[in-house]
Length: 104
Image 1: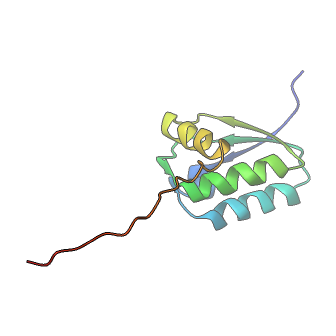
Image 2 (image 1 turned 30 degrees about the vertical axis):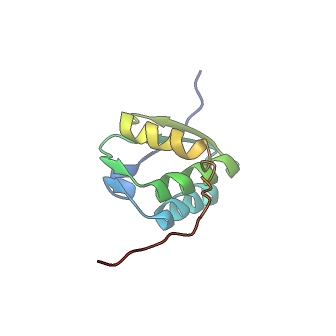
Image 3 (image 1 turned 180 degrees about the horizontal axis):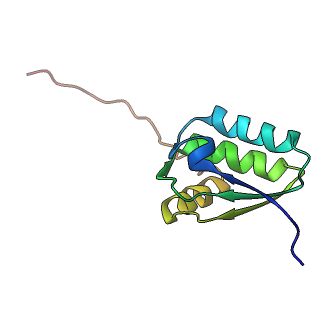
């Protein structure tokens, strides 16, 4: 027998284009304040996700006390979530040398 869960359809709860970090904050505040313990996050209808939303979503999800399962995740959204889960890339370092300029 499966455990009952609450479904949150992001396209309806937030918008089809998930852009603002604050939207992810409010989403997880609402989830954490809920008496339910199991959540299904439905991405159907979501067209895009910004890196800042994805970063905040992933951070909040990892800290959540609730059981969260994602469904209907578009490929582009999945790639963005994977990108932020890998963390920041190592910064490239360049040596700066003096440059002689000739004005003609």
